[in-house]
Length: 251
Image (cartoon, rainbow, N blue to C red; front, top):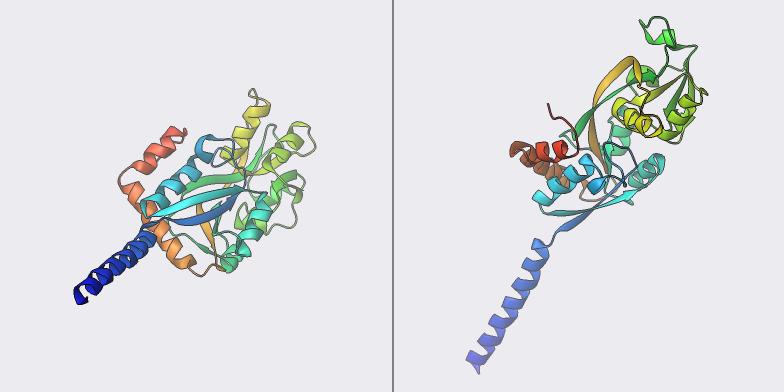
């Protein structure tokens, strides 16, 4: 009888170990929210674009599964702030956002932000005040540079999308557009591949990060794990391979 009980105990212990070990080995899901921002990330791009694919690969390396939801930018920020998602995929870091979100340490990529046009809108540019009479379209909720963001003397037209800014520029409803050079170039090519954007001024070369929700209990752990995964895929050149596949040159 004692021997039979011992066998049952061993079987029970085996199943307990199996269940718990299975749970620990299962991939944890990370939910990300972002918007369509080609060529960096967009629902229409292969694998969601280079930064979405890099994110999945980095998280996969440290045992996480990733689910991306595509929302208007302002709504994505709000939903992550409320804790409905784990993080915003690909965001600029600024003091205001740092109060709401916990940012990753490793940059996903870099963007050039500035003011652009297809025509010459000022004879000579020396400082931002030279643009005070220029109508400039920019995206609602975005950040261009600390100097631009605080320049309340500028004539800015707020749009819900970069594509909206491109359309206004082509219809000559605004003189210039402010935002990411690579994003605007990709959108302009869709509408008119004969035109080229001329930079009036490059205001910032800025890194993109993930902005993690502080409402999630494990946000610091997930952030640290992501940074570890991103470092690993940068070290073994997987990052370079993904970015190059999407047409991005890696410095």
